[in-house]
Amino acid sequence: MILLEGPYVSDFLKQTIKEYRIPVIRNSFSVGVFAEEEQLTVSAEEAVQQMKRNPEQLIYTNSENSIHWIEEHLSFTSLPGKINLFKNKVRFRELLRPLFPNYFFQSIPFGELATTDVSGYSFPFIIKPAVGFFSMGVYKVDKADEWPGIVEKITEEVKLVQDLYPKEVFDSTEFIAEASIDGIEYAIDCYYNAEGEPVILNIMKHLFSSDKDMSDRVYITSREVISSNLEPMKRFLKEMGTIAGIQNFAAHVEVRVDEAGRIVPIEVNPMRFGGWCTTPDLAWYAHGFNIYDYFLSKKEPDWEQLLADKNDDIFSVVVLDNSTGTEGKNISSFDYEGLLQDFESPLELRKVDYGSYPLFGFVFVQTKDGQMDELLRILKSDLSEYIRN
Image (cartoon, rainbow, N blue to C red; front, side, top):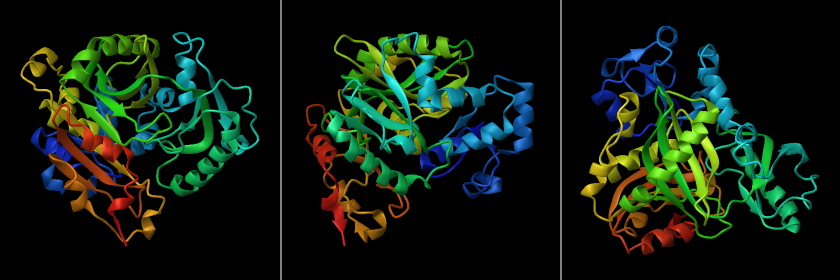
């Protein structure tokens, strides 16, 4: 079953639901996505009964906005507990303390950020909401005298975004300060099967413009990214899954790998793959299989075969977050066509209502190996060159 919620459902996910006749749980959002005759829908009562009859029933959700529905209707299952375990970063760090006993983290109430003395903390550290989404309110603190300015930025950002998502998705009441992990960052779309074994469906490398950059601007995947990380990531996911005790569960996992090859988790986003249908749809362009179907049909990719005939092209999702310094409501137009012309092989453009959300959209791109200039350029851009007023 699929539980749909806002803010966004991609055409690819809609087509997947129709093609594979995946039951969709009926709610106020899903009835606006499909006409009744287009799709097999399941009432909330039917969904609850199916879960009671079959505790191993798989559920995928495209958005964490659905967490409230799960807590309200599926409290008799282990799902709400697993969601809270991963979604709250303080609880997540406490869960993994046996694996990382020396890892620094500290919970700070939002109202106490300005008065917290961080001079005794281990620098550098990351400050972010304990329950957050999409790099909102995330900053790197290199030294104590940066703290007041960063708290001021966080306060302003919270004012802008706190009403965009339910508190289950973004909650500004509690923040976590935690160690900054040096190394390469990766995102993994995966699921845990009925035996608790992890099944990797995609691995993406997260590119940054600098060590201060905390944005989600560019994620890339390729034959090299998959092949060089598949086995170590699988071992790590198994270890984490064993501690958490999870089965029949989809996840979007973010980690960093240091110079010694040690994998340190950043966060786990429960019951979904990448937000706004980004990274799961990227897998279709890059690897040619549908990871929504693979999860719900309990399939496992044959990576050896999939990668055997691949060239070294790089496939990316570019997140067009609004870093212009101008609020979306004050921007009259964005030059999407001009942006597309700056990529040699754009695959798909998805526009977003930037007056309502702090981003302009997403671009899926195919790039020849060794021709990364277009990705490095957009990575460093604040996108102001595309603003038309």
